[in-house]
Length: 88
Image 1: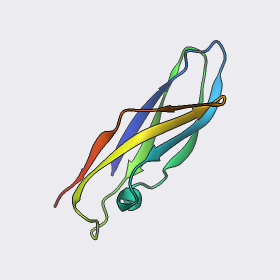
Image 2 (image 1 turned 90 degrees about the vertical axis):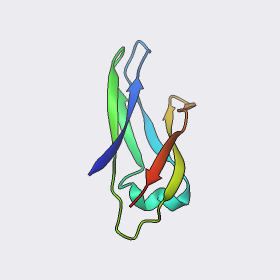
Image 3 (image 1 turned 180 degrees about the vertical axis):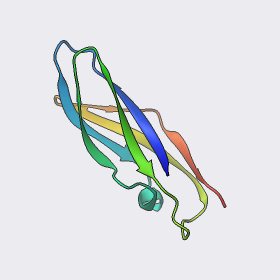
Image 4 (image 1 turned 60 degrees about the vertical axis):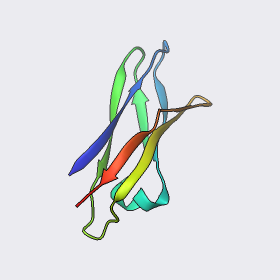
């Protein structure tokens, strides 16, 4: 089992609750078990948000991008993209 982990840091003075989504091309959707999840982070703290991944035997080989979208308190934030590589 593989996992891509995003770290969400709260710099606010109160706890925040939001959505964390792994965004990637449709070719990679079968690699991610759950692409959308909620997160609550206390003031001044950080939380790890794992995205479990697996490569099915029939998965196409190739290179794709992925990034994380964080939506909280009416704001949307995006990470820099990373590269997903599937090889045999």
